[in-house]
Structure formats: structure tokens, C-alpha cells
Length: 79
Image (tube, rainbow, N blue to C red; front, top):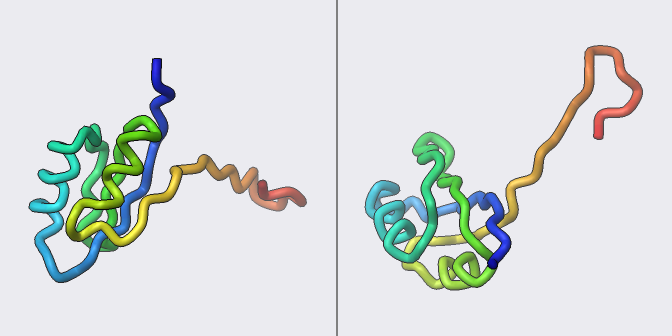
């Protein structure tokens, strides 16, 4: 069974983000959020699908989504 991961997809600004989201979904991405203001789409897919998504017209970059914990106020460690 393939390992499903969360991804952040940066898109070009020369196309509609909703059109790119539709193409990504058709290629196998399970869309989580469409962040129009910053030109990103988040979603889940396995590694093979993520490699295929890199070839979708309008995709600039695909990176794994990582959890970041900044800790409580005044904490010495932030990661």
C-alpha cells in the first residue's frame, strides 16, 4: 500500500488557480486547501502521484508539508 503524504504545491500566476486545482485533482491529488492569496494548493497523494503532479501545466514546485511547532511563548527551543 502506498504511503500517503501531505504536499504543498506552488503554482504559476499566469493561470487560474482553480483550473490548476482541477487538473491536479484529475491526476490524483486529494485537494485540502486552495490558497489563492499566496498561490499554493495543499493536498495529499502518494510519492508516485506527487512526481506525476510536477508535470502538470502551471505547477512550479511540490514540497512535502511539514509540521512546525514554535513552542510556547518564551521557550528556548522552537523546533
